[in-house]
Image (cartoon, rainbow, N blue to C red; front, side, top):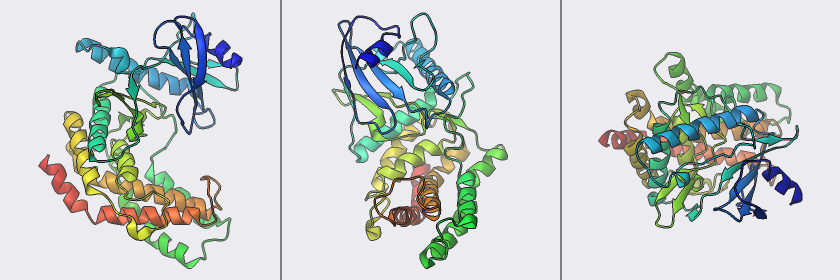
Length: 360
């Protein structure tokens, strides 16, 4: 704890540190609550630079985004702004918002008091998520700064399709001869061209890139004690992307009636109640800046993400399980079956989804 105290004291914080304790259960970064004798305190976080290799770019994205949102809140006369947008603390005597010893990277943000996150995924919280992430995109739709990709090609379907074909060509684990592998491969290839249409539309100039959150989970929102959304958190993946990222990524996990690695494939089903709630909230806050192409392709976004994740799981299975952690030899194959079943469930509801989106 002494090392963390020394690091925290390098930042321009108020008051004396009285305690540092673990905070939350994040899977990517190590996070700690810094208690001080003045004010609500701070959050100290070790940045996972194995995943986010360009910390300078990462922090620049976050500071640009939060500064732009803060300026809009101030202009609109909002109160209690420090609870409605994250604030990152610079180093003493510097504008830089991270500390490094050359191998580890740390940052400090203001702690938001009397705020909670929820894990619940139901129509009510899906509506809140849609509205919050749509508002987040809307607030950043006119950002004047150029942001970079913290994880290049994170949601690039063309790249994921190429990676699968490369895995098939190499076949390092000798799994491509398995009959089920061949069957899944045929189904993926049958849909691959259609699922890669976002990149094609972008090259044709009909689909823009926006500043998106790219990790849209229910627990990435802070609520006050009355159940009102305060702000969106976990901003490491804030970067240019298609709006489909924030829509499809949420629905892939929230609208599957079972876990993504459930072997009970017959129970995989896309939950239209979750879809309707999320899209209603999303369009309420994002319609003002979305193009007709973006609105028309929201059902495509719902299909794209289970398909993309199936391709990633499948490529990893063929490569010999080198990327995703597995608990048993066929874990990635089970995940692939699950996501392809979800994809088929979404495809079967495309007309219903389109009708609902148009009704809004």
